[in-house]
Amino acid sequence: MKLNRNRAGLVGIAAALALGLAACSSEGGKQEDTEAAGAGTGVADTERLRIAMITHEAPGDTFWDRIRSGAEAAAQKDNVELLYSNDPQAPNQASLVQNAIDQDVDAIASTMSNPGALTPVLNKAVENDIPVVLFNAGISDWENTGALMYFGQDESIAGEAVGQRLSEEGAQNAVCVVQEQGQVQLESRCAGVEQGFSGRTEKLYVNGRQMGSVQSDIQAKLSQDPSIDTVVTLGAPFALAAAQSVDGAGSNAEIVTFDLNEELIPALESGDVKWAVDQQPYVQGYEAIDSLWLYLTNGNTIGGGEAVLTGPSFVDETNIDVVAPYAERGTR
Image (cartoon, rainbow, N blue to C red; front, top):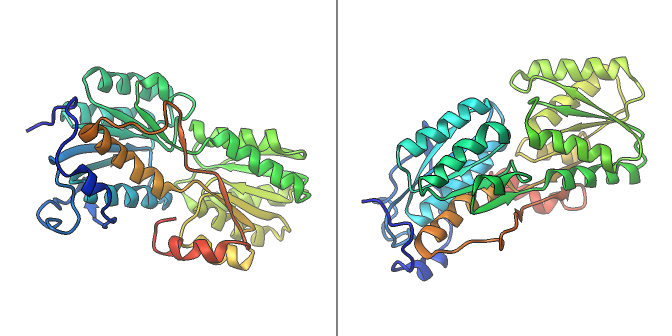
């Protein structure tokens, strides 16, 4: 039976909030039914909910493993059936949101890398009395959708912080590598870098779904312009590709990146990648689901009408030992 979205104060909320996190898994965009398996092991004593999470995840980008891991942990704790789906093409992502509306889910958590394509269908969800939370992408436009809350990093602020740090470190000529053209959060990062950087910067567009092409395009750019002293990538896998590009071009350029994954840790420890900007994607996925559960079961909202920022924070040689164990287990 569908939950009455205006009802609050269901039994067991206070106890459930104190419970620890538990892992769960999902396949094919739908979470396994963990209601029976979780009985007596920390699952909220509230009505079973169906929450759709829809992202612009592109194939092969391990960043989204962190998002999904956090969402699944919250879903396990909160007695939620998580319906995960993704498509990097904005019109297709909008269709996935429409599918969730047609399924009459209890709530929707979505990214919004293309506000023009996503805003109308997210408005439609809200008009159909489906609570919406946005996360990860869309911080400048989330309120226009009627969403209740937003969890993520302000990409402009993060980009400016990167640019300022590069200036402090003496960099002069940086290239910002964009793996998916047209995604607002990626463009905002590069624009922020340019804003905060005292040196020269330019963008290099690559096909992030073909890592061999990414590597060759960066290598060609470095060979063409030996004065480039810094490569800024917008995701951990692309930083690792850039490291190969630097070697291939015989360049002395240093690499800095947004975002983390397990594979990036050795590169940070060795200095092949100088530092990374962490936006805590696990937290974004977790809070997106948990905040909807709180709203549906207790009428709560988080952030007081403002976006809840999950970053940026820098990971470098001074704190890599602290961060590494969490990255290795897939939560940073």
